[in-house]
Image (cartoon, rainbow, N blue to C red):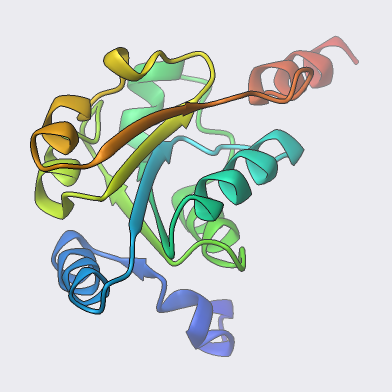
Length: 166
């Protein structure tokens, strides 16, 4: 039995675009606030956990747009991603504060944001709100765009560099 069969409640959080749109609409229709963030989340670390928990605290539901492997390679280089899509999506979906995980092949999640129209769009502290992809779409629909602070000393690149130095 594979992990996805053993843990259907976790696997059910991994959605295609159509499933995510239906779920997002249902949540909004129920009066819930939907928060969206995105990233590669290649090697999950404390900084990610802190950031994602903060994002979820902003609303009732958290959708994580995750770069597909091809997108990660284009953005980070041919040595990335380190973890495959199944590992990355299952780890993300297993987090109690994540309600949906949606892969995107593009370099940015703009199309996904346009489809879902989240109430709140967030990114990490290295992004000013006006630099966040999709900010204009969310703002035009009455939503909020926020930049959350980083926890210093935690990054996938720093972990990768540490491993390479051994």
